[in-house]
Length: 110
Length: 115
Image 1: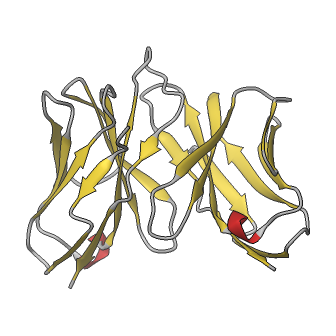
Image 2: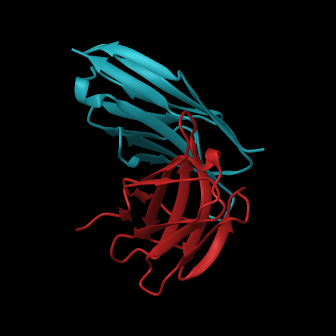
């Protein structure tokens, strides 16, 4: 069965303290891995898509990487406005169904 | 450009009742997805509509159903509500490109509470 696991469930950082979020997956045929950001009371907002092992993408303080079994979202020198829940999702095979992990709740304190 | 809009934003129902949630996709998007986000759980895939047809369905009972209209807007219907149906229901839209969508654009959701 296809599965996505995110860790840690929650992470508290001081402003400027870099860290990484993990997304491990077990799927039959990865077509793409997606990272989303979700703020309280809002829908998820797209961040990145990664397609193959070794691929990396960056946006401001965020950098996503992909291996054959997991993806990391690296946050460099985070700011309080980076506080949110970060969701990882994978697309396998066909039928356009994204399988989401439970997310990592990130809190960045000044 | 307007994003994905959902209505209503909040809804309170009692067990056994029926509810209809509505979604308008981004202009030009033909695919609409419905997800359920229960407290403490990840997003669970409910339904995918494209060009007016149901293309895929998640592991939910038949009392969850929906449709897509010619203008690509969509409704999600839930019959015989149960307490565990309490959740945030999210609608997303995308451009359907040969069966693989680059990214989904989500609305802010409808928070359904079943008492």
